[in-house]
Image (cartoon, rainbow, N blue to C red; front, side, top):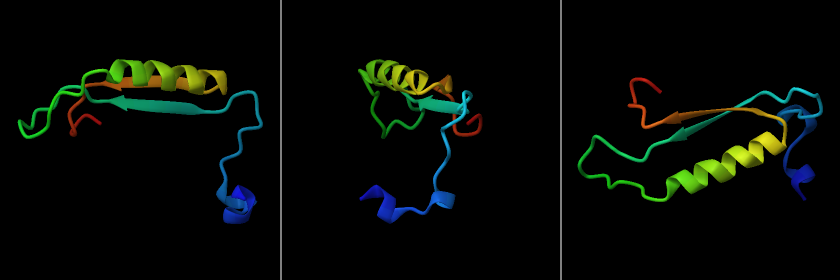
Length: 70
């Protein structure tokens, strides 16, 4: 079914030994007081990192960066 949704030129090829870079932007603490701290997100980051590493991506995490840095 997925093949029917995307043409080959629309899909990122992951057939080489070096797949590319996955960047995980992890925001736990926000400067905006309207937004609450996201407890437990470190487990999400760990799981995503494992997933992308298992797919042979180089993984970089950016933790609690401001919008101007990201």
